[in-house]
Each structure stands twice: as structure tokens, then as C-alpha cells.
Image (cartoon, rainbow, N blue to C red; front, top):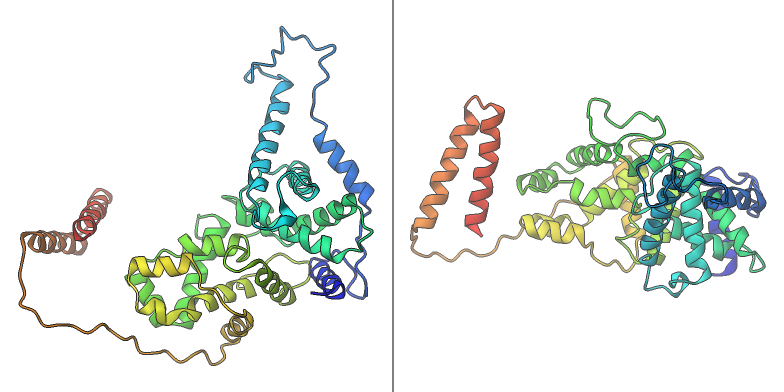
Length: 376
């Protein structure tokens, strides 16, 4: 992309997150970098002045003493170490994020300042989202922008995305923002609730594909959690991920909490439908392999168009017939193994048809695990 295109991307994202005027032609952050610098200094100021501290009463080696001021320092150091460990692994294939360079340190600063300011625990995956914002900010700001300015704008965008946009809820067991979850009757986390609702929506959009995945015991949480939590950042090459985020931000309400269903949910369904033929021809392991390692696309444009079709109930791709492998007629030989599998399967069926209490249900699950193990 050219410098102008990078600037347009930054402005577009900033508008979507409501941190730039919708009428502005050039991105202008709402807060100055000095505000962020003060915030960062405050968050990093956790070293203890032990000049007048009674070390007999407050032993630095004791983390359990009530009111011990060292506990706060240990907590901050542990959080900082956890963030650094994840940042060390962030997009290692890109020179831009090379370990121990200025960009690497800036990411640590932004993430630590964010978690401390909003009194949140750090969660894995935040590093990848923050890294994408930081790269877009770096490319979109003038070359004369200082590292502090880049950090400041990244912090502002990341905070808006996580807090105002509401994506922080995708990282915790319950809503940290007080937003109602997708399904108030479901006690699971906001993210798991969204994943389950997306899978239900797949049933509406492509009932045959949904039935196939359910029949083969494909849990939506095992792939949708990763897709949705970091907005598909691991499913596509980096430049395609930026195109996907362009698309998402352009189809979401400006500066408002993430709705349900949203374009993110429709895109997840489009990704499943896009590989429907391969999924319909696969068993449990084949489906999981494809869903957990999405195929490389020469362009994401067709996939993004499909997401719009899914959202607008347009004409989806015609269901293709599933080609079954040829069956060679051979004499049937019933082995002892086959008989055991058949007997156990019959027992499970009988139990399922009976009035099952909780203990029996657990026994059924164990029997099914045994059957699966024997079949391998």
C-alpha cells in the first residue's frame, strides 16, 4: 500500500472506533500524547521506596503478609513478565515486531498501561490485536511521528476497541463492561455464548452443513473461539487480515458495543460455508483439521462478499453433491472387536432411551469414549 492508503486505513479505523471526527480528512487523535505518557508513567511507577520501610514488618520475601506493600510490586512484575512473554511471540516472522526493538517495547508499554488503567487481568490474544493496531498506526502516521505519539494513538485505538466497542468481554468469563450477553439464559462466558449462537445461526443459513458438523461431534467452541476472539487474525496472512479488518470496521456501528448478530458473526458463518464441500466429505478429524487450519486464499474478496450474502439472505452457493468413495463388495467378517463395539453401542442406545439420571449419563459418556477408542 502507498502512504496515502495507509493514512486512509488509519483514518477509517479511527472513525469506526469514534476516536476521530467523521468529517476529518486527516486523522487527528482526540487526546495528546502527553496524556498517555502521564498515564504510562503512573502505571509503571510501582517500585517501592524502602528508605523508611520496616523490613522486619514488611519482608520483601513474604508475599502473604497483610498490607505488605511488596505484594503490589510482585503483582505488577508478574503481569509485566506475562505480557512480555506473549509479545516475544507476536508475529515473530515480521521484522517490524523483532524482539527487543522499539516496537517490541512499545507493545509491552501499551498492553501494561491498558490492563493497569482499566484494572483488568491480561489475557493471551490481546497482544495480537494490539500489534495490528500498532502497525496500522505506525504506517498511517507521518514519518516524523515520535514513538511516544505512536504508542499514544495505539493505546487510544486499542482502548476504544476493547472498552467502548466492547471487545474486552471476549476475553473474560463474564462481562467486564456490564453488557448483557448474547443469551442471558446461558450461563457461559460472553464469547462462548456468541460462538454457540453463531453455530445456531449456521443451522438457519445451511441446515445440511450444520447437521453434518453436529453428527460428527464438531464443537463450535474449538474453532470459533479463536476466530472471533482475535477477529480472524490467525486465519489469514497478515495483509489479508488487514483487509478483513477494513471490511469489519466498515460494517459495524460507529463507536458502539458489538451487536449480535454482527458482520463478524456472518463472516464466521461465511468461512464455514466457503469450505462446505470439503467439510461434507470429511469425518470428525478431517473437519477439525480444516477448520483449525483454514485454507490459503489468493484473495479474501469473494469470502467477504459471501459474508454480505449470508447477512442479507442472498443467494448462497448451491449445495454441491457429496461424492462418496467407491465401495468394493467384500465378504463381511464379524470379528470379536466388531461384536464388542456392537454390544456396547446397543447398551448405550438402551441407556439413552431410558430415564437417565446424572450418574447414568456420565456412564454413557464413558462408554462412548471406550467405543471410540476401540474403533481407532
